[in-house]
Amino acid sequence: MKNVIIGTAGHVDHGKTALIMALTGIDTDRLAEEKRRGITIELGFAYLDFDDGTRAGIVDVPGHERFIRNMLAGAGGIDLAMLIVAADEGIMPQTAEHLGILSILGVKSGLVAITKSDLVEQEWLDMVTADVEELVSGSFLEGQPIVPVSAYSGANLDTLRQELRRLIDGVSEKNVRIPFRLPVDRIFSMEGFGAVVTGTLIEGVVNVGDAAEVLPARLPATVRNIQVHGRSVHSAGAGQRVALNLSGIKKSDIEKGNVVAKRDTVRTAAMLDVKLQVLPESKRTIKNASQLHLYHGTRVLLAKAVLLDRDELLPGQSCYAQLRLTELLPSKTGDRFVVRFLSPLETIGGGVILDPDPPKRKRSDPDALDALKIRESGSTDQHIYQAAVKEGRTVPSDALRRALDMTEEEFRLELEPLTGAGRLIELLPGKLIADAVLDALSESCRTLLASYHKEHPLHAGLRVAELRQKLLGKEETAVANAVMNELCREGSIRFENGRVSLAAFEVRLTKRQRAIREKILDVYRAAGYESPPPEEIPGLFGPGDKNDVRQVTESLLSSGELVMLTPQIYWHRDTFEKARASAEAHFKTNAELTMPQYRDLLGTSRKYALAMLDYLDSARVTKKAGDIRTIFRGFGAL
Image (cartoon, rainbow, N blue to C red; front, top):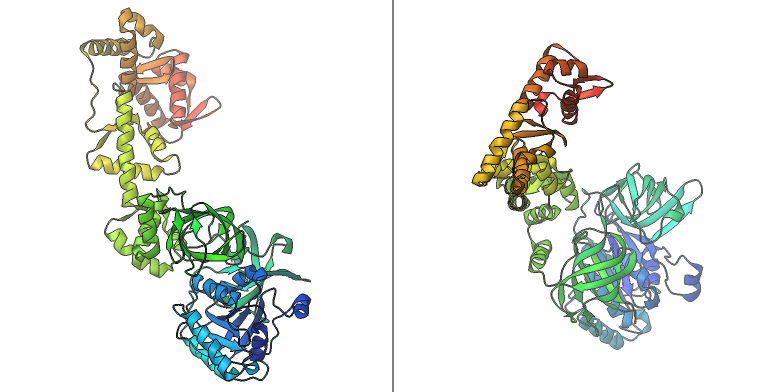
């Protein structure tokens, strides 16, 4: 069955609460002060039953300007608006303000009820009706029914019910296939049950036993019980007024304006990318960096409006903006909001959230503006692709789906053409990366190597592990490997001896450097295991060769022709391979190797045997336990 929320709106003391009482038999004024003053202060709730069994929730919002925050808290989940105008007073300030707020919040349908019609003459009633028609011209209420009624005499109440029932048929079904979300408008506790929150379920289905969290603090809780219109139910769907009894949390931990949602499904952020608009009837403008009150769901907080393409937003205009908040706000793409000035406190406009967790934007950035255009009006596949690009690396496909509020089937159908065209690539099972991100990483890889070659012209290349670290850090090894493998396949880079270089790069030595190179290699080759300390090598050459000796030695280490066991022990590659082969042959017939055994195998001193064993340990070829080495990852790790 379709779940619909009808919301009243209008000026203070225009008979909203009395009309709801006449329609439903429920008095929504629940505070003693409300009874005494005759005005609604807090939100009131009722339900309206129709003859065909349809039940609609009704939210009675305050009309007084001092309680506009409470009005906004109730207006967020409205499907149908019932704008109330008293026949004896006609249109008043909050009548127009509430209509503007409903328009900003995206309410698409409703009607006007002219209350207290029994108190005026027909001629006056006709004049008020004409004023109302002029007020709603150009709004979502243009052309909708205007019904004169009397809560006192009951005049035209049946007509009002019929019109509301007709409008309900035109309300779109809510999306119940996504995780639930409930902005909290009331909190109380029940003896023996604990914390209870109420609100309009704006999306999804909530079930008893669901793992929930209270945002923005991310306090874990469990849904213990659910009530809809005073009856306990096992589940409730979007568009219903619900009360949730939460276990694992205290009443004092929750406050009005919080959001209760399925755990780990809603992001919180202190910045929002938005499409911001100023009401056409506003007498004021929004200037860049204006401080505003932001009303979102049942929450109100301070925000600075950074206009991205202009210095001032005039009445009737809209633009892309970034709202920078003083607190974290849980929100989703497509959420509506209202903004009011701080002083004087008046509604000026509002808009829609395009990105609930954006990077900090620079003003007049064409790339940012293009991205926001796609966020606003692009196709679903564009939204998926852009969200993947925004990540800047791989993103779990399920996280991407949840961020876009899509069902698994919807996401799969939209994803297939993107992966088929190679725009999104599944590098690892369940992990996607955009081709633009991969291209950018490839360019970064080439830039890093070019810079390294410039700084170290005699080095064969950058160590693979070091390039991975520079490219993406330790977290994205698979992505870095994929980038390097793709560049290798296309012939841009090459791998050699554990190092990577640009394919076109060559180590170019001068004639003197080539001579130094050959002599150093001869010295280490002839020395075998008992090689000279590195600091002795420059003494084999003239004083003017010191810098060349250092650079050539670094080049030989880089190319793998020399192997550094320790800072004091370098071996020729042939010597190293001989020592490695001895250890590998030993482990083919033995499970363990001791240092004395290895020293004897090599026929050298303890110093050099131990250096090689430590090297094998650090490379995770072997594993040391006391004085014994055993195979760990094996010699393929070298």
